Image (cartoon, rainbow, N blue to C red; front, side, top):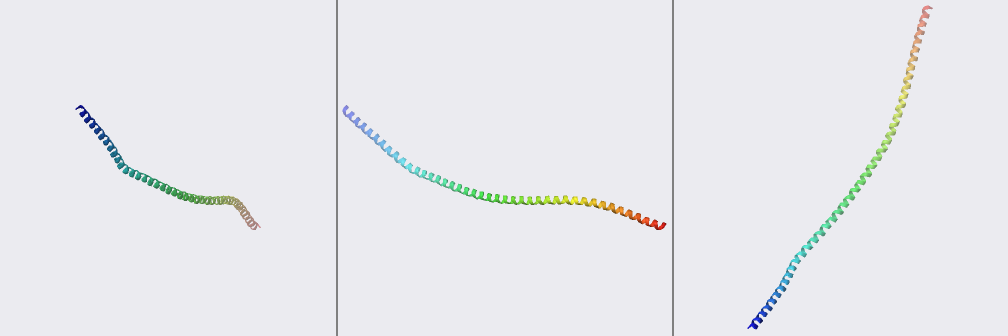
Length: 152
């Protein structure tokens, strides 16, 4: 009887171990299927993230190129404006030089005219003095003639 009970117990034990082994195997397969079921959506999500990153990088490259083109255009416009302003400044400098020359000439002419006016004033004063002398002589000579005529 013990042998029969021991044999039955050993058989039950073998069956329990086999059931546990099968459960572990089924659990592993189920977990694998679960991982595979989760891996597909994860891979899809990862692909979308990579695609979004690529799209963002492409947009950033396009934006940088656009900014670079705008900068080149702005630089060209600034260079054109600078050249125009430099030309205008050169023209203004030339005009100033011409005006400076004219101003110097006008100043020289004003100085000459001032000297001439001073000389003419002196001459006029001398002539007025001579005229006064001549008039005085004339009056004296007229008076002398009258006196002579009266005395005479």
